Length: 518
Image (cartoon, rainbow, N blue to C red; front, top):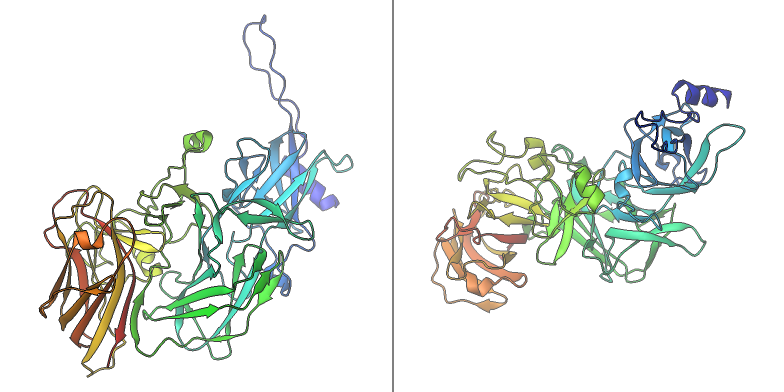
């Protein structure tokens, strides 16, 4: 204890005196002196996710914590706790870790939070840094020690997912099968034992229905093994009576969905284990891109807000939901989950050159960012930007864009097959409905075209055209293309047929799958 007291004193963290009174007219009343206190922050003895001692929430250099609605950097102490200097004296101290979870707290009546929909894999035996929110409150100064003692407690539980196999994982997406939100805007509630927990909002336009563990890193992913690889995903503590839907994608553009109706209960501060899952994608699925690693921006079609990495001080002060672009960052959601409106771009356009490959230096985002999203091997990503679980193709200011897939390398060498290509598409409101959407296949021939289950009149060709009016702007349209002569050297693209520079020529695309038919 003497050492902690010494450290607090050495850092200048003990109760400070009054601030100096500014000079001025002697007739003016002097402002009340501002008093400051220091806080010693510690995680509760039970603040660990149950089964594994390494799952304790640990402070790191540079970590930020909110105290009474203002962010502070913590100072680490030798015993694993932290200290915060010069906090204005108050009757009550309310702390939120990490600070980005705190939603402005304009009224101080109760904390509002955002639970990010993206968490980042941090290694075996732990959850992502800043993925587990904590909350604490205290009143008064400890007279014996001279500072405020504040104990933090976790607000969520942990799902332990064990995967077996030989693939390299890129993302793990988790949804509540009941359709209830699992991330986004949340408030403080209590569990059956009276512990504070985060409760995602059901009415807020800043809700989200998915949680994503991003395992991409800078392109290395997380390799599985036959003995099992564990992933720890922080989730809201509650009953999941309808079970969970889990979608796993790998770095080779294959995927597997586990739709489990088994009821589960995720308890605060406890690891909930699931039976090990053998990662085995369907044999006919040779390409899948759901854009699950994409989480900046909102869900345009769903009409919900999304994430931006930062807000200005003015935006924080006035409660504005506007944010900045991602500025090339491949991570950061766990540290800065501020919301942007649903029609704001999640990032800068990937590239503003028509036939430039994604890793090119002319891109507006870094190569590591593209690798993390598993888009590095795509042929072209022209005027594209990520949104929440989908890709925007075309620019609101520059006009039409183009995406061109990688080659279908999962088709065995020497095979030439028939294949089904499916995807979802939605045009922006106000789009030019007299133009057409075009898909061109470089090796093979399109044989059939269906929109929302209805076949179109079509003569086999290398390009398929779908009138924009058939796609629409009021929700996802389902497209199915049947192609022949498809091989491992085949790829295909999407773009506007006429392609004007109008700001209404862009659309959103999601859930691209290629399955072999024979």
